[in-house]
Image 1 (cartoon, helix red, strand yellow):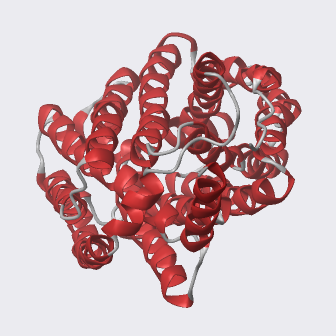
Image 2: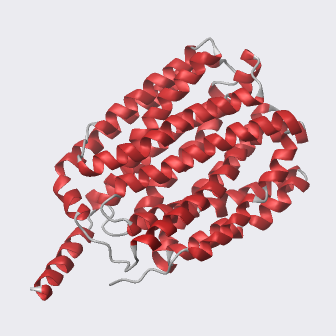
Image 3: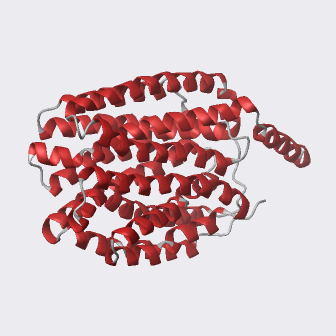
Length: 405
């Protein structure tokens, strides 16, 4: 009976691991939807200098805008993932994208700080449904190459984050806040894509249920799994607290320290975010080959020499180092998510929600606290302080070596 069960499990795993060109197109569609979703979200920090000037906002208020968006996204994501792991709701994905559409249209026409916060919250709610649901679909269509699927999905988001500020610099900054409404066209297209993904997901719910029923194969105790998840959470903290200094304040840093124009500073931010996209893409498949722990270790701790040097160099080397930092630091996230999903099989959506939620939550808290520090001590002090955060990468030594049983 035991041999029969083992053979059945092996057969099931092999069937689950099979892939096809159509399935890979689903992964590409997930990446495209992620690109559009994060492109729209990137409009918000890209227009911070304009909002700051138009409404007389302080750096603390800028941080509160980011906190509002990222708190709504981070707090809801784990619960969405937990619930839909047990009760799948394919239609939730396009409904969340509709929420993002409403938020971005509001952002084009708001007239007060309070309404900016409300629009930011709606965009955050859209993200809270998008990330766990689409991450689950990408893993479902992976054919067993989980790192590649997760990194392809994630690189779509990073590419969107990179192009968002560039398009904002071309469309919104020169012509005014009302032109944010043009990004509503991207949101409408995203609704169409996510609706198609939800239909494919609905047709493959049996495959999702089969994967959900798979047991753990890492041979670790419950206590060691919990300890590993805590370590991964601390690594996400160091990564995204540092990333918040770039996504929210890098343009201000360049303008103040090197006297750049807003448009020029946005181009430098684009270079950084482009490097983040490239690092994300390579991190997943490399983790499939050499192990996720090695990628996590190198990505978090390995970037520390460059972050420590960044506050003390000229504009040219600031640009060079920002690209190196973005590439190395970004390679960890796909490995972290897949590593965590393998620790807790059957909870793909919840784990994706937790770690995307931590990403948004730590980023939001970091943005608010760093904004306060920038008001009190200056923007250059923020970068000097944050340069030490990647040293927390030494915690990766505590991650267990998993054994397949």
